[in-house]
Image 1 (spheres, one colour):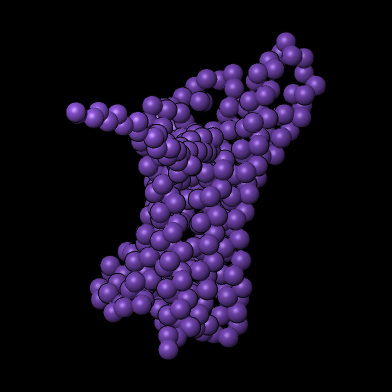
Image 2 (cartoon, rainbow, N blue to C red):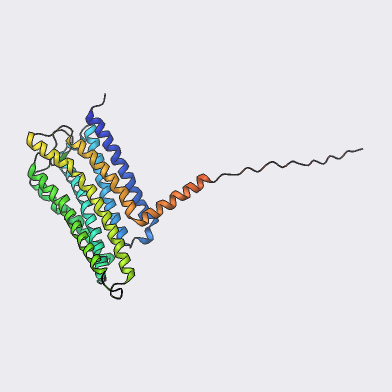
Length: 313
């Protein structure tokens, strides 16, 4: 009979694989169906978040495979540490990619008169800077030797028993992006409330409508960020528990991994919901498929054939 760890591992792998499929669907729709709109900054930012999410799910899947099989990731200690670092880099990239979404909405709403702040090339550079930042802020844990093989698993990560290391991770990976998004949301909300008293001659009706739409999108991004942040709650609980007892609970990383994979699926579905271009293309595909299924060939009734028989005398 399979152990609890094996069941959790297989379930976690399946959820992550499902997450990869959904994010790949988003990626394909953007690249193929929306290729003419790739100069739309919001689509490029969504593509950036999607790539980070795909690689996060992929690294987790390989870590689970290592855990369920021969532990191939642990054969080379340096490679094991490198793979654990990759996992954290991609996870961190997801959070900071949504900060870029918030910055873009802030520039569209509050600084809409400054067209330089909504230029396509600027956000390509910001995406590059975002990836560079995620690499740099997670290098100290490597130099401080915080990454190690987890005693209960066949891969390397920062153990929850290392209180200083986990606190650093929680701050730089989760708290900083969430605080930035919250500040942006407050700034946009304040601006829109103040602008409601401004004459339409100063702030055009069309611009106000776009502001409200951007605010709605930002609210959904915050919901998405809260979903991502919620996956750290069990990790924090286990961190406190493991620190108190002095060793890791056997199923710590299995449970946290399972919650993470479920949260990533919700992130993928919410990404589709908050991106009009994705919703539109999926809706068109769904309707087209239903129309094809519902089309039925109506059989024509057989017409009686009048046979004319001539008698030869």
